[in-house]
Image (tube, rainbow, N blue to C red; front, side, top):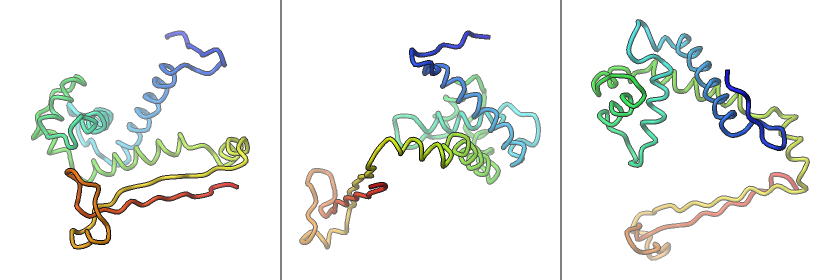
Length: 166
């Protein structure tokens, strides 16, 4: 078993935290795989492999991964499966598996109310600020001009500032 590496503050280092997170997600995935009945017989692609494939395969530089892209990622993970083989495993149980793993992982990683309060107590004020840009129909261009270039000819920027704690 590898020796634990700690930072000068006594906290586990990044590699240790990453390893713990991977172990947690794999354990959760195995539990949820059984609950959702994602795997019904011995297969090349188990629940853990499927979750890794969906996460890593959809983290490619392009916006959507094709089945061939996913097949290549599966080979990189040491799983030999074709695009059609992956397609056969994308069904309601697969959706339930991914939803369950995501929800349960968030439960494990989310701080409790007391932990959250202890963190926020350090700050006299907490402001949440965000903005987004929305494309509008071209008919509204007279009222909401776009920013030019390849963007929509009619756009609106929405800014939000929320005093979470003051």
